[in-house]
Image (cartoon, rainbow over all chains, first blue to last red; front, top):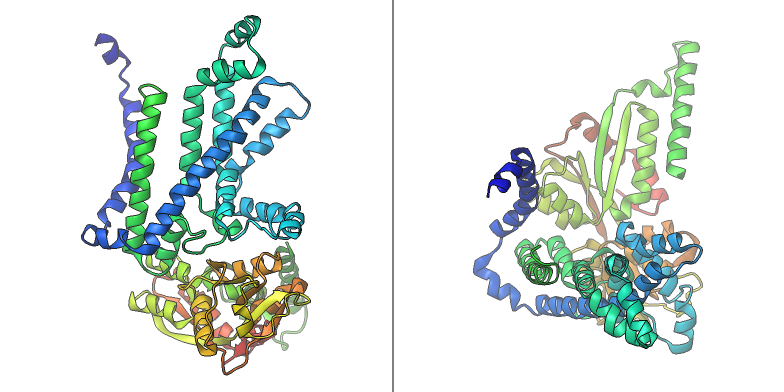
Length: 264
Length: 261
């Protein structure tokens, strides 16, 4: 108790309070404008429902894709030494700072119907990612995966490699060590990274509308529906959908971060 | 880059003119004698006006070196929303009456909006027209990927009107947030055809060409312009609108393919 009062710093607490207000006030603003009376009608709207469903499906799929490809990349970045590693790390985290629309254009130029590898694929199979639901998943994964890679790499770096070495000396193979020792040890980082990536994917707008387009039912995720709603002067429906997105994200962030990162 | 260059160029020409005016006899009025506008002018304009308004802004700046003309180009509904939320702008130019009406209804304008140009729709295709699109009804072919603006954006509602007049049901692959995004999708080859304005095809350069929509199926888009009530630079706002409606502004608009008033 005594120690706690001694470390109490009123200036820091005041600044922290201001910071908290900075995040809380926009939420309050949204809550104040929420059309509770027509909430049920808005949420039962077919366009709203398909946007929500699409958002959930695509964000989960892109998170799975991010885990499947991002964990190996994090492992390579954390454990191997090779020239150009810093550059590779820079490139793979670039989507975090890149304006998402630029990311969308870059994706078009690579995977579009006339893109670098998109064109040969489209010529051979007739399949193109733009304007399709898989295109949304790719756009979301592009933007969200760096969050997972960074978190998992940090986890791999901070873990005690002697556990892996011990398992190795006891005769465990490479894959057994990775599955039975490494993965469980970085479990919290992996979970935290996955949650971060998922929440980023859920809110993705710029890369999605640029790369995958915007069509109800196929590529119009909740953030796109919110934007179009605002454009149509349908503010109540946009606010309602925003609030729902916030509630879902907040619930997941609070529950999972609390569980995997201890008393966060 | 080119814009900055042309601003620099016109600025230096202006300086030269001023210098000449000072040295030459005072009987000849200097072209820059009308240098009375100053400060910053902020114009919110529909995305389809990007080329024409940028040029008009450069010309106005060349005549008024103390005036800094700033543009924010976006879909008209985005701009209307920004005005409703109190964006500090002087002039609003919309690509349709509906979004201007939103601003008027909210009482954000000062003075009656004036129509300063008209536009028509065209089907944008990649140069060479690889899918042989020749009419609106060709767009119902499921192998042709059609892109259009989202319904709240003027070019989107106009496209719906055109499809209605032609009696066809077109399922687009996407509904973009503004007309330039449609053009981008066509010029990158992602969409086979896009419903855009005549002026967009003209400004797109060599990657895109236009397929005419006959007048009986086409629409005439009205572009209204209005000064905003909260305009920080009322004088320049009025001068800009006069310039757009005057012969110099109309000439620029015509050179970008607009139908002048």
